[in-house]
Length: 148
Image (tube, rainbow, N blue to C red; front, side):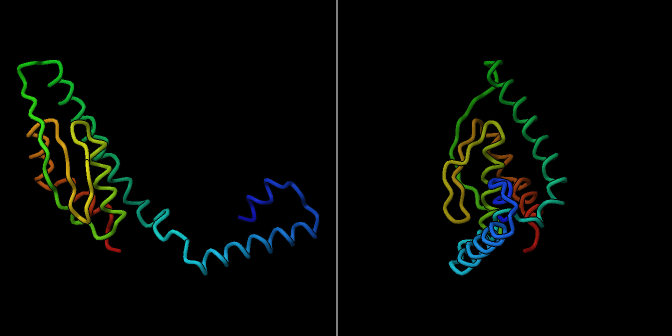
């Protein structure tokens, strides 16, 4: 915070530097005391595992894009919209949100609602629903989330 204050103010006089340092320290102390600091804001521990999760998710997005495009362009391929419930095995709210967002990022599926660990999902086809119900994405997100 002090670095941001220093960049925005542009003052390097000793009195103003001291007041800026004191004011940023006071704000941090008050925020800590009020317990408004987000404990899951940027979980640094997930950073190394993201290098394994993102390529897999990108590949799933590409495969789903191709499947949706084929079904739209070829009228012989069935489109069977379905709404179903999936239970996530993640241990934290962040893990459950990552799972819900991963479902929504994959074309042909959208997470409609999230109630605790239950997700209501709309799938473009029954194949998309079956693929999600196998639990592969859930296992990948749980592995990405790791033990906390």
